[in-house]
Image (cartoon, rainbow, N blue to C red; front, side, top):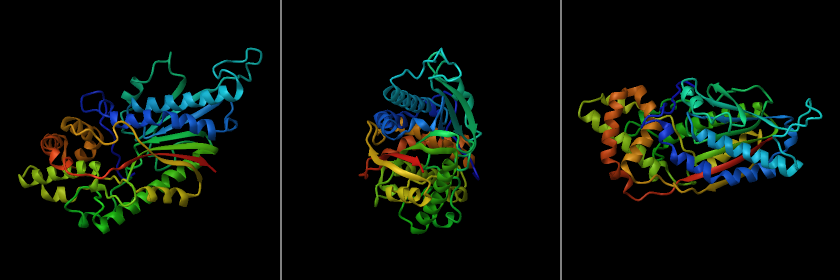
Amino acid sequence: MAHSHTMIGGNGRESYSKNSTYQRALLEATKEKIDEAVSMKLDLGIASSHFNVADFGCSTGPNTFVAVRNIIDAVEHKFRRQTQQNPKEIDETNRNNPKEIEFQVFFNDHSNNDFNTLFKTLPPPTTREYFAVGVPGSFYSRVLPRNNLHLGHCSYSLHWLSQVPENVTEFNKDSIHCTGFVKEVTEAYLGQFKIDFGSFLDARAQELVSGGLLMLLGSCLPDGVQMSETMKGKIIDCAGSCLGDMAKSGLIEREKVESFNMPIYFAQESEFKQVIEKNGGFTIEKMERVSHENEEFPSDARFLRDSYRAAFGGVAEASFGGDMVDKMMDLFEEKVHEFIDKPTKAGMQFFVLLRRN
């Protein structure tokens, strides 16, 4: 990646670990879907006595641990139903051929991710039924050996682009993201998304064994809905407006604000599907909308401030510095209701199950 921006680390008030309940709600809502997907689509024959799982874009926890727990539970349930055996038991008569399944989990994120917090908060060994490995690097390229992975997972990460699209600044001086209403900007962002998501799929196709599963969760847009018509889009519009106000007051340079764009793109449902189909390395086993209790962010200004700061503050800090971002977020908390109290269109949460061809 040209630039790497990670979630705010640590366990402080503004950290991602303290401000990711929205993302966690989708993991909880898809637990049954994951169990069903593993039960119906996973062939245990692709693995021997060990089973490799990877979470791409793991951040700092605790959400990644929830995702891994859901996956391991599902695989163990499948093992019990299929073999009538306990996957944790070892055949004492033949220890060279144990009946148990051992799990290895690869936690992947950028090298500047707060892996210290991630591993300090791992479930204790008495309850953690897997070996944990940190894998630094962009998931838009390979991070694991070929034909090594049995099940991959990625949640709320694929809207991050590897870079802001080239030549987008001249068409997007009045916004900090792809609103969906400027043709040149939308085409540039969509083009970068196709490159990046295609690279993600290419890498996973090499890492997964044939028949392995890839689970993708996150947010996208219903076809025909533009980003700035949704609550998520209006929240980002508010942040851009705050930067504009700070430029007017002389706190930051106007040129910096006009050249600042977020490296994020929430694809429309059909765009997402088209990239998968074009890649050809996977069969789409399931692609459906998911509802969870936090379908849209609650209209609490402080909650929105802290959530936005944890997820996107690092990008802004790289351009404006931490002090200026703190001032921006204070202003954001004051005026966010001017944006979200207006009518919005619903976005969508998705669950996609892919099987490696």
